[in-house]
Length: 270
Length: 297
Image 1 (cartoon, rainbow over the protein chains, first blue to last red):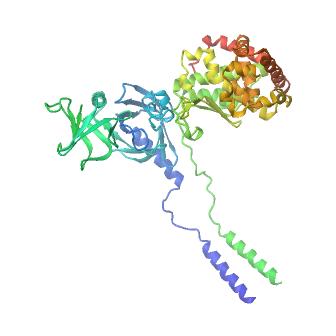
Image 2: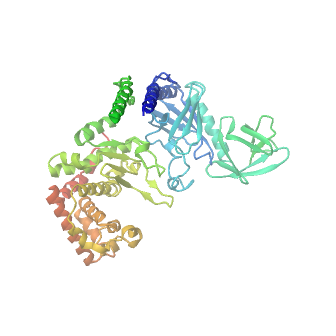
Image 3: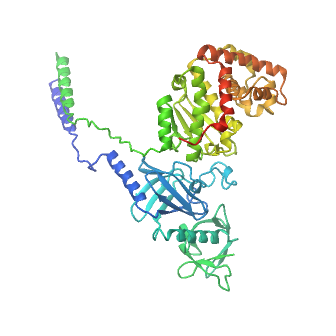
């Protein structure tokens, strides 16, 4: 039995050694303090742009429809003004940044410009399913926020979206929004399109909302002031592209076209 | 002795281990709530609903308080003001007047009211207009439909919001003190459970079977709440019109009236509320709706 006491003694020493709780913290501050700092930082960044942000908004999971630009201006600690290229609405509602899995940006009272995409399909002429509609998010996890861009992730659809500052000054903003609206209308009112590459021509038709389809491929574009910008990089006939620039009408293309830098790929307006 | 020593040893070890806890508790909580500027509606809700009735209103969308199964949009600010003012005027104050104080609503009404802008749509196109969770929360949908025109439309207000509010409130009163079991025996085996959706061709068919509405036929609890809610929210004329809807029968009306006697008796004996006095108060307020200011805070 004596040996067992020795064993016990040894185990006790092991316990004593295991007791040492002093470990270096990976971060100096507690998680809550850091989360609150992240929330405060996100709020400060959002409010730091007097012209507001261009919210490159693609509704639905992985952008099954087309995208739009929302001109979002956080005018006070609670108020946000939203305009858009797809409508002439100019609506002020409220927002909040609160702590969750990170800073969460929520547009928490109704704003018809943003919430159009979150309405059930039954209320927007059955665009998309009658319950989910276009699947737009109204709450976003702030993945990254700095002066150049804010990266958001929709909480329901998990789509990663980007906000960039509105360029220019307060006086030039209305003209910028007008040019975005003109670009949106040019894209949206086209009857159909055609991809033209040196080797092939592919017919492109409208999908739901302003999404495009060609055979089994779907393309989601957001009209910009210079042309259109893809939700991601697309490849057509081996040519990879994301941004296309609008080119004015020519004799061959009387409605104009969108093209990549070397014009090896054209999206022709029909 | 051998075991005693072992125990002694273990005790000593435990003491040593416990002695290791050197960290003091931080007096400050690690959860720090952020502060949000209060606007006029926030102040109105705090001063008129939280302080008076211990009831809070969530007019701003709160994700975790909302049904995750649906695509919901927030209520807008102007409609929320109307809803909140009407809630107090048509929902709470009639009870205050009848019971002689605010303690009745404060004691029994659900503590949280959640506003949602539009209805919760299912994928088959049907929609939800109001829900209650336990005795704690009532969610009102389609708040954005409330505007200057619909705000003075008594039928719209009753159908969209106040029928649900009185109905759910009755459930909570029943959970506090159950209604007499004799009520259950009147329609006994006629309750159809979930088939209520398809069981009746129209309201008149439900009346003929002794139910004030198709939904009332789902269970005795719903029957009781529906009878109560329809009776206090409808005028005498509307109530009679409902009972005499196309397809209704005198036999059905008799069953309903027999049940209504028990509902009235329950409200009077258990809660000291005369449903006719309550109904008269609500009707007087409805008649005065055009003079009620729904927008000033």
